Length: 561
Image (cartoon, rainbow, N blue to C red; front, side, top):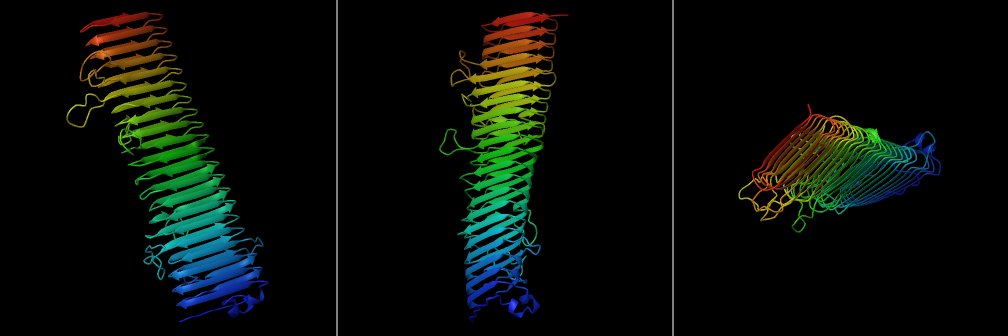
């Protein structure tokens, strides 16, 4: 059966009685060709224009209600459907006298579109192909790609879904003025929201003014952007199948940028409850996972890059990150490249800075799978923490509870010779705890090692609870042929203005330094094999210098009360 309608107002308006008399300069044109098609248009007010063109079979412009309904001023709606099974419904209201809504919908093959606009809005939807089954929740709707948009205010929405052989879903809700939303999905079963005819929690949800969100997806991914405030910006780009990104921003002038490139499996969750904050995430699988949160404060910034490099072609494997900031003006820069990297950073205070870099195999700055094991934990204010790992199987733990402290760890230890069996033990472990006081500085350097002179199994611990203390620990093995190093260094500073330096080059070296007084200096240098030294300074203005070489030497120094 073929039905064609051409009307100067609308097919429904011709039967609407008094409603038709309220219209001024309205134009409605409906062209239908095919079977089982239906078009309904209602227009009230003046200067409204509606053009509906349907070709194919089973096309409609409504889902139980009016297909195109315009009330108010200066509306324009164009609907084009070519193919089978498409469904479109557009509603535009401006009864208060605010005009200027524009809606354009183009569908080819199968698709579903629903749009509702209040105010000076602009909407563009383009869908091509697609296949997804929503008939169970929406009786009578086709099993195809879907797009849902609702706008209140002077907003703009643009949705493009092309060549989605397995189906796509896009949802946009905007309430405010000057908001912009763009969804571009292509190739695969992508999902940018999953709500229908209700305010969606998925896709793009923007409440406020001058917010902007962009989602670009290829080959089967999920993206969810929520923004509540003014001047926020979110951009999500996913280029392969199996990626998941969920971003939420509450506040003003926040920015989030998520990029997940080739190879599937990237997962990103970002939460910002602050102002003038920025999050930038780049992931290139294998098992990349990032949870980023900035809350309460303002001026925070996070930059995280995970994936690739190491020793193979396109190798990444098992990267993971957990970063949280709650104060003001905190900043984190983190980069992981290599195999099974792990990263945890927690900053609760103001003006903290953490800089980490991992490259190699099985590096870890803490372990996000273990509660209480934190890579970098800064609770005070104006603390600085730097971590650089370029070796293998290394672990770093930094905790800064007080304020104005400095911590730095550099690890570059090779797992050589690689022992038989698995799992391998940690090649190098470094721990810095600044539990009280201020202006303390602690540095740990663990480097070296080869198949002949191994530097494996080194451990360094620095604990500071006083003020203006300085601790430096250097560990390596450059001269002793061995399958391991197993050097151990511990420094505890609870007084003020103390200075400790420990250098170890060899195997089975043990250094233990305790400074509980003030203005003390300790220099402890060890080379050789199985040497041990202990220094205790509990007084003031004491100096200790220990040099050990050879094998099986023991030294003990006690100064003070």
